[in-house]
Length: 149
Image (cartoon, rainbow, N blue to C red; front, side, top):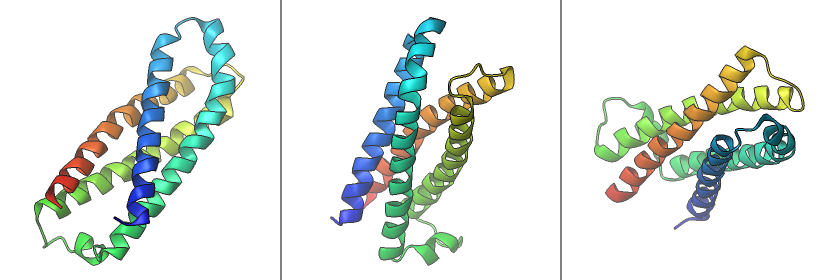
């Protein structure tokens, strides 16, 4: 196994584990005073951690695709097999999740230590839920690819 794969797996575990932790934290903290005490402290730490994890995932994933000679195969839509199709699906979901994560991070950092507008609240909660759900779908495709190869 290459160093890229090891780093990719560590970053994936960190990304998904952090997402699950924040989801549970969000569901558990119903009291507004508790939320105001916790989120301004934990939020930025988690945000920077997740940005780092995402950058590592994107970098190592790209390197693995290039190093394994898959870049041209991925863009040749006449080539189909289970592994390549699963990787294409995974990459589309990763792109969507990256956009959602960027949106969520911008809203979260801009609204830290202040009340969110209704729109900001909707964007924040919807993006959090989207990231949470997409994590497991992306993980599914990673498992499918790993089972095939």
